[in-house]
Length: 307
Image 1 (cartoon, rainbow, N blue to C red):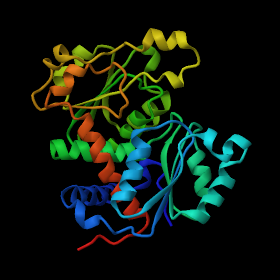
Image 2: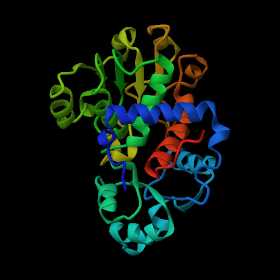
Image 3: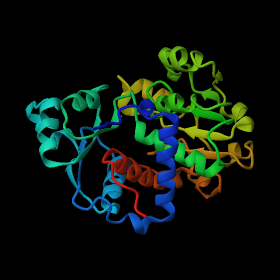
Image 4: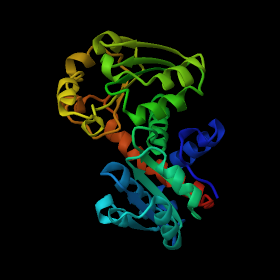
């Protein structure tokens, strides 16, 4: 039995195999309609989610399986004080695989230690979000044809953004990756990401506070929202929430083949006028997330690829 807790749990070769499977699913969706007949996915979401939870549910339903679970801690026995360890022991009696989102870092890891079914980390605090990372990798590869020799701009909340942290860890394994880290001083990447990931792998990067300055050199611009739920006081959030707003004027500074990604939800960091730009790929990115999660469910359940 295997879990997915961290984007590095899969080797580069295993990641490529999973992305290949997701690509085949995208182009041959009907042939996968019954590969998980009789299988059940439990979605244990201790904090709010729209895209991640529903994309997991859509993925399992597309495979012919069924879904059970809860969408908030208040609607689970966690409200009565039940531990993650006890919850997963019970869920293991009801389902074949589990996707867990939790506000506390490491909660899915704890669950995996007590589970008798595969556990997928669907986001734990400000720590990791591996299925979003797989989605990002599939999106980038599908749009550009590669995952190497790219200049990737990461913009916005780089301190609390778990999607950013996971994507950096995944991309440093590919040759020729260069990062431009765009954020206000208060929201720069944590020291451990800078030292343990970027510096340790000898990856080229620079930290800037101007989005306009960075735009012309980027192959990918990964926008993030400033996350109100990660701030200890509202004053800091209000002061920083409008640090970067991508609009058509800024898009004119970018390459013709530069793509904009965003893990969503957006607030106001991407103007709706940008949605019409063919380089705006964030809604396509959300669709790729369903294909990736279908491939992941099949992989962890060891379901054979249909002929």
